[in-house]
Length: 324
Ligand SMILES: Nc1ncnc2c1ncn2[C@@H]1O[C@H](COP(=O)(O)OP(=O)(O)O)[C@@H](O)[C@H]1O
Ligand SMILES: [Mg+2]
Image (cartoon, rainbow, N blue to C red):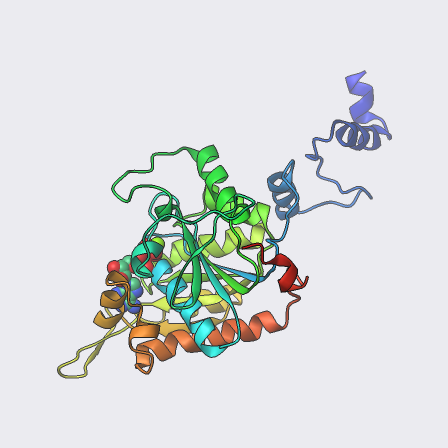
């Protein structure tokens, strides 16, 4: 029987038919029999059995700030990007979601403490500072408590931060991602439509390799990459003005041209950025006219420009969405 199937003319058809019936989707042919690429197969495998992506009510654009590596400045970039978007577009409403479940930074960087209030529908109201609506795991657990959770618990926490919060109405929701390409990244990109991803990297080779991995992951889950932010690319000595490229120079431009991505900004290594983050006074609000703040505002302006060519994710009337 087997011999006849593999040799016979109809064996390919039968194989495809069985694959379809069993819904394994592993057959290397499409419905019409065309050969599919390895990428097509992988994308299909990753999306198998996944929930349908649902927009967050009242949220027009979702931008995730990611990298393959920790400590490269994602949270700092996410915070200053959110503030830059709000500063550039004074009529817009901006939110900031801290999706780093194991290591939340937003409460400290945005100078926010306390637990969110609940509304009548038992949804959490975001905490607000500098005009930005914020939500973080850090508001829900004791800040000295270690969050030792496995993948499924992390994924359910991400779901709660997306769905059980009165986010709308928002023009932009900026999401500060944890490092890597793990459960949170997949959970987010599979649950909500994401307008675009911003990849943060230092110009160091190792960080750039991880940045490339991060960008590839978003490509695989069909999230457009808006561009790269090169962080800590240059240190300018405050005494003599000498510029030192501590983590190397121009690494990001090689990767950006290799992958066909834009570099949206070069953020210098500067003490006012570090101090601003640690003290809960981000540079875009504490030193709005500084050259460092201007870099973030320029990045925000490019993000706005790129998003303006895309359809908003949720276009329904904001008034209907504000359940607070
Ligand atoms: N451009 C910069 N200049 C100076 N310090 C920076 C800069 N970007 C980030 N930092 C500091 O580096 C550390 C790590 O940044 P963070 O944003 O928490 O990284 P990540 O979220 O990628 O782990 C923080 O102490 C932050 O203040
Ligand atoms: Mg972080």
